[in-house]
Length: 306
Image (cartoon, rainbow, N blue to C red; front, side, top):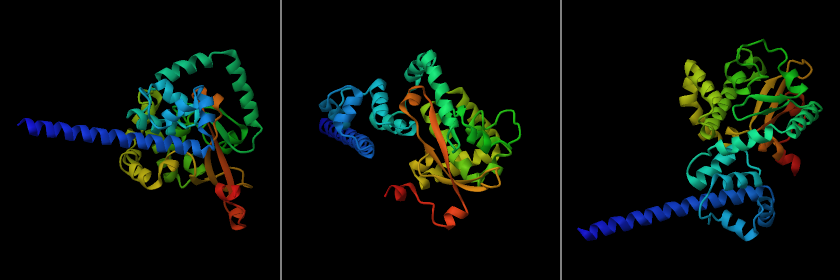
């Protein structure tokens, strides 16, 4: 009787140990992979964190007595992680999505500073000088600022009480009746946006704005079916990068007839100053669908860098 009990306890301890080892390995591969992608040494990341390179080496190997939210948020910032990547980091380290309360408190105090308001004003001026449509969103995808090229892209969109592209990009793509006139192959755009909604809710499950979008999705039969059944299968087939922003190429139609049908890559390029405020900058990189592709001038980013 006692022998069986001890064997069962020993088996559970072994199982728990192997599970913890596997979790630590996933965390190590993920963090090291991100550091290698940025071409940073352990010493450089340690400098960003304000700790010794030996201490950072322990962080990267998962040898941390206790992962606090502060440590994980600091590591995510040092490795310039997107919100999606930050969620992965938390899941690997502590088995849950991040709890944004602490970060939100910090951002709120920062955003009230006059210097921050001045910075955001200057940043808007800088964005307006860009020829590509570019916009800045918060955690619920409310559009906080957008440049002239972005406004021009949607200038023929008719007024809508809740789904204007100048207000919330997810709501526009999911609910505005004019969205298919700009976002070509609209069902693919919707799947991507539903994946974004799901990913955002994982990180900010208490956000009333995101919950309201999900409620409206469930009130729409076709969107509900896509969210519950089609989107998870699409995520599995497309991979994490397409769920987030990088690498996904879609199509849109510009209202300017000289531009017309365009290939579009949604690129995230958020400086640390915006990340600190809980903001994300997205740019729609447009490439002429017909002429440039036919002439072979369109090349994927990895080809351009070669």
